Length: 204
Image 1 (cartoon, one colour):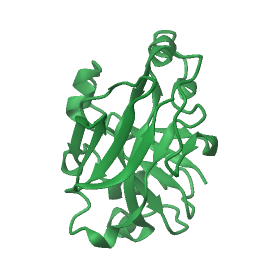
Image 2 (tube, helix red, strand yellow):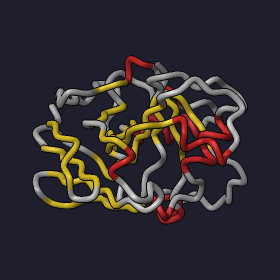
Image 3 (cartoon, helix red, strand yellow):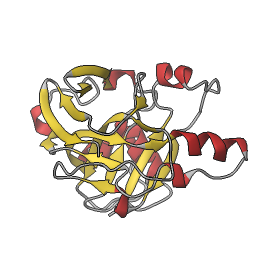
């Protein structure tokens, strides 16, 4: 199982982080399987970072083996979605970018890919028009709609499958909207998809 993630997929989020370039293709990065955090287990802030940010995202679960998938067929390759958190060691990311080096370590550390309960895509009329949000200690801190994605889910799947074979159980983090911010010990995080709570865990 691999975790594929999309960076800079919402225009307003790009602005809040100071990204001014307009990408012609999706920005793809990977997380190892050891990054997966599920079953409402707590997230422990790592010692190597002084600022770990939440990035709330729609997560898509791949259900078929696929390579070189045409966009019009991409919807056949996933069966479920949920809300997830792409945790980012923001201080390390700034450092790595300033040095001009790769920044996988700030994205791919242990438990940096939290996922909630998956629900069938058949429950939704249009996967490209879904509301999702994150609450911290009962206060909404981030919300988005998949209609605002710069690169749509089917196009991302088609693009990625040119380079690597998609396998059953792979996860696709589709990007975060505006509103990212740091987490701190003791906080309670809850992720909602169309008003249904799918993600629920604590920061330790």
